[in-house]
Length: 212
Length: 186
Image (cartoon, rainbow over all chains, first blue to last red; front, side, top):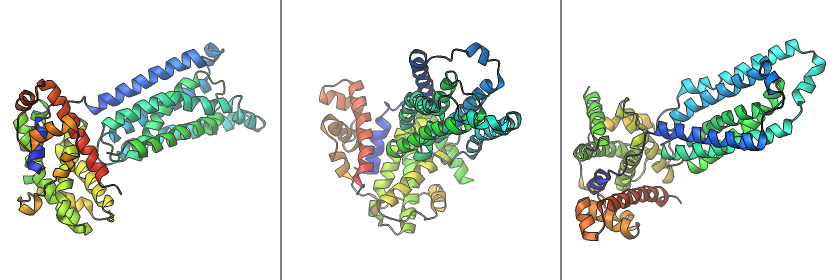
């Protein structure tokens, strides 16, 4: 086939009226979040002392952390779904959640006596955290990978990792409502490991499925 | 300046194309193919790759531009988006051919501005790819590209409705893009 002939076929293909990639990514994230929320509601559930916890700064900080992760990672995913350079501004925005966490940890170390540090770090259900955050992130991650396949990511591994971070943002936000460990020391250890697992999974999926 | 005008023209043509203007789309793809040919030839030459399958890469890039056009944000200029896709496909093509990819690709792609006059050497026939398609997709893609028929003519000839022909054409083009990708993997 000569190039002119290919062009004739491309011009005739008016079927290619896909929706803009940003809508696809948003729909995937929303659908993934809804499924994860249903799994959370029916299989995991809220912590029993939720109403009391809502009034404590440590509990609320968990949402500051997970939602800032979700927002910055989604910004990155939306940009990486299109061909082009890596958006440095969004990459830098991704440093906000860890920076907040480090600050919160410093405050925690100042206000909590050293004898309590290790108990706060180990928490009460570290293993559950490592299992449930990745479990709740799985459906959002798969949905985002499918959405990115509709896109044209010129950095597939990074796009996959960003999808992993966004999915972990959804999973961790939901899990935070169940988890009774609110200390930044716990977040810095176990949430971070759980989020890293999901991010790594995203990078591997990106490497495998986001080439085009 | 000339490049800026060209890119504005490209963007205008793409907007018209997205609104369903087939003639504008054809003009856009033709204009892009000249620039892509120049850029790809230069990229291959700098990397020391043989020039005889430059046209393969031009076609693969055009297919990608077509199938991924919904990733262009119509508020943005079209040039950087085209260059990003062209760069991606060029690096990929050179890598598949076992070439180092540290060639100054950015410099190469500035030549998206330059028009390469078509020469016979560029007009390699890549019929083998179309022949890799199966069944209706093969017949339909072949009829519309190589035989130059319209959707309606193909529909009448095959006793299908036009919608079904369009769907088969679209799937055929997607399959063609996948074959470009896989055809070179060792």
